[in-house]
Image 1 (cartoon, rainbow, N blue to C red):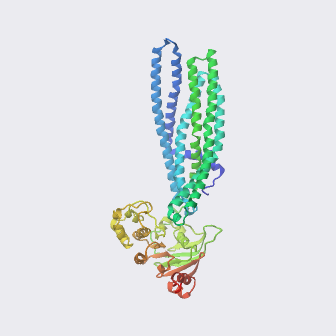
Image 2: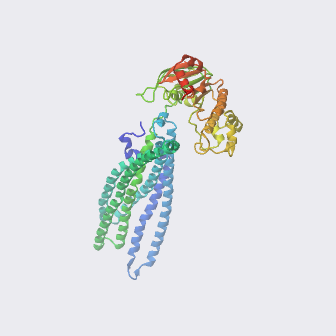
Image 3: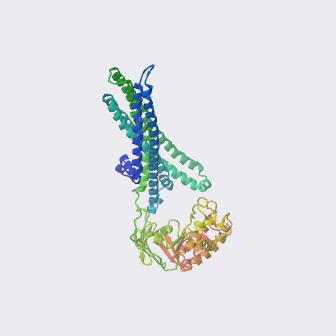
Amino acid sequence: MSLSKKSGKENSSWAVGKRLLSFTKPYAGFLAGGLLCALVSVLLSLWLPVLIGDAVDLIVGAGQVDFPGMVPILLKMAGAIAVSALFSWMMTVCTNTVSYKTVKSIRDAAFDRLSQVPLSVLDSHSHGDLIARVVTDTDMISDGLLQGFSQLFTGLVTILGTLGFMLSVNAHIALVVVVLTPLSLFVASFIARRSHRMFSVQSATRGEMTGLVEELIGNQKVVKAFGYEKKAQARFEEINGRLYDCGVKAQFYSSMTNPCTRFVNGVVYAAVGIFGALSVIGGNLSVGQLSSFLAYANQYTKPFNEITGVITELQTAFASARRVFSLLDEPLEPSDAGNQPIAHCDGSVALEHVFFSYRPDRPLIEDLNLRVQPGQIIAIVGPTGCGKTTMINLLMRFYDVDSGKILVDGQDTRTLQRSSLRSQYGMVLQDSWLFGGTVAENIAYGRPDATREEIVAAAKAAHAHSFIRRLPKGYDTLIEGDGANLSQGQRQLMCIARVMLTQPPMLILDEATSSIDTRTEEKIQEAFARMMRGRTSFIVAHRLSTIRQADVILVMRDGHIVEMGSHAALLEKGGFYATLYNSQFAQPDAQA
């Protein structure tokens, strides 16, 4: 299922609300506590109009005030206000706890899902949009839940409580209030249905903007190098304009809710005042009871205003929840819990009649066959898009083959546990990745239990020790961001040291020395030669000078191995490899 598509049934507000509530089940105790506190707080606040009415009835006229009778009433009022405030605070603590813990659980589930979905999901969606779902959209859910729980708890109890008190005072006037109430609900639901669609569009557009900003900021050097600033600004302004338009429309519709319901509630209050005054004149109601009734009418209508006022937050929360749930509904990578682990392998690899494509309508690798003996160095070369990196993805089981088999030590990799298989490879990619931590922690990423001596030895083997020693705190220097305080070459040397520390039985080097100067590259090649001795190694290279010593060079073109052999044999053959090699080392024309 796509991240952007779900069935109408799954998208309904009822289904989304039900699913949100399912995340609150572990915190049912806090929910019950919040509801109980709301009940006590509201009932005490509803008792106040009764006490006020009793006090009013003790004020007959000038000089006719029963002060002794009012003292106990005033004490009861003070106690009710204090205890109501205490329980209101306790309710807020409970609802806040439920909201934040619920959103934490949703965010944990979303991030956990991202780590378990097939790599194809991450490759086919904007990383910025995925970040927005895990961070921004979950914050929107949190805001909506905070408003929703507190308003719904108090609102529901207030509505039921005031209705009960009004019925006990005068059923006829209470009936007037009940008859007029549906008007407020009708207005609120009418407007909410129209604002819902705009909030959904707003959430999707916000995710699109996050993706663009993440993309442009992360590649600002490229943007500036190609003078793309104005076009980038135009793209941003176009998305920002759409976000503004849908945001204004959403806020316009939702902002109509509160004034409209307030108007209806004003009508209710006026009707109670008129009918109550007539009842006082007729002797069916005292002045104190009328004042209590007017207070109840005001309290009765207030929750409708608060609930409709929070519809904006709830609509935004539901729209964001849909985006997060669409991520949670992504299919997981097929489980391999029942597969065999592979503790160690001798390094033999075979590909038998392998077919693979990222899209069914675009064939890539077709009927690929290869046998690699333990300890061999296999170089993979060819033009861009021929399938070199795809072959690495298949070896690591980042993707599974469409048909055919990949064998490691004679075992089909689909029968092996992914984590176990991947632990047999050490990988150095063209794009170096470092995380926010110390130099030592980055090198020990694959072996967190490594000693400082082992880390230093790996750095020396990768020729990284000399520059690390010159850093402000050496191996304890903190890496900024994605290694912003290091050069690209230094970052790559650290990634090489990371692999050298793990000492895996097989290696994958994908343009591993592309960002290193020629002198350092010679030293790295020596280090690689020592590290690859006795280990099966796959080297993806564009600079053909780096793979002359490979045992076998695979020349790929359009997903097929078109040539295979040693460097000397392929040059002697004078085929496609010779053309590629000579194009890199041909001497320029003397007269040029």
